[in-house]
Length: 262
Image (cartoon, rainbow, N blue to C red; front, side):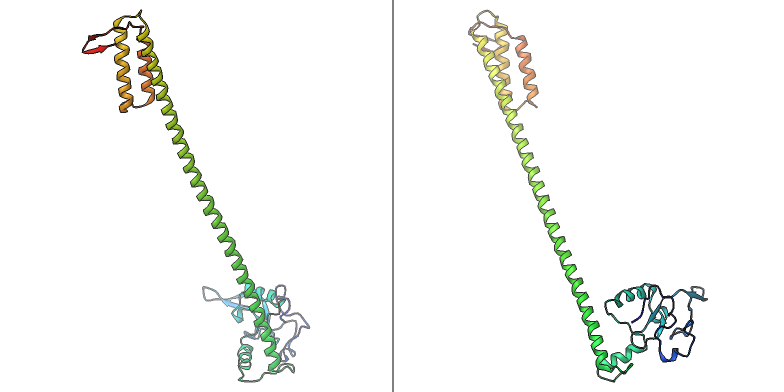
């Protein structure tokens, strides 16, 4: 056990320590690495500067160390403190090689009556815990990837549906425009036919009016058939002009200006 590493700036009086530490003042313990109460680091100017390093206790020898002296940042020490609640052990740089040698069958380590078999059991539990944590992380990653894939599928489907809907709307709009254009052409054609028929049955109008209606009607039909009008509005304007100047013509047959008038 390393104790409460987050709140403990140094070992508390009466805490468990190694045999070498028992002869020293427990209120001012020294780091087993640097042999100092306070931890000092060298700044960028090459000067020794006090550093507020957190303390950490080895779970094998029970000695205390500055985290910095064991190549640990304060953040690392805080993380190890949280992992301690999950039975994750930490060993100092001195004990770790001995423990590894024992686990590989190259030696035997005793600590407070515990042999290497007990240590191996502790280390196995630590490894199992790490494996459990890795499995949880992998499961979380897997569920996250699945959620992302489902979201991407929904987005792709939404985009495809929107594109299809826009295409259908555009097609419908074009069909409606074509229908409206055809209806306008038919309406104008019917109006021209009726105007010509009215002119032919009327016997009170003059020849010139009959000629204008006949000639202009033929011209308009010709333009409609060949698509010479730039738009339907132009057709309507020309029809209106013809209608304004038209009179009820007599039905006659003669040649005028090179045209046959009925």
